[in-house]
Length: 76
Image (tube, rainbow, N blue to C red; front, side):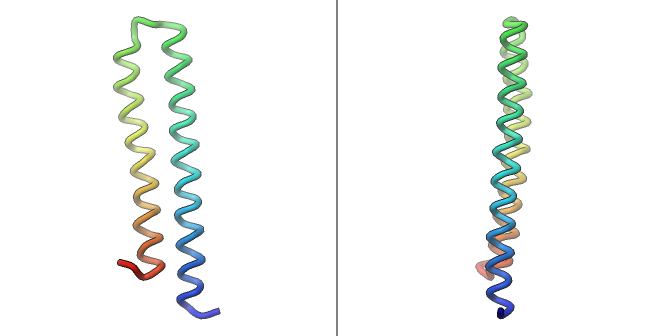
């Protein structure tokens, strides 16, 4: 295998793991939000703010994985 082929393989693995991690993070955050809102409906707005911050952090990890994958493939 050439170096470029290994870079493409590494890029695919990087974006795959990043997407899985972001999906799991947002899934767990959504589960926690729904549990909190079902137990205490009066904290829904405050809990939603914290959920949005957590979802943004989880998506940031996926974007970092995309940047690493693009660098490995040679598009950046």
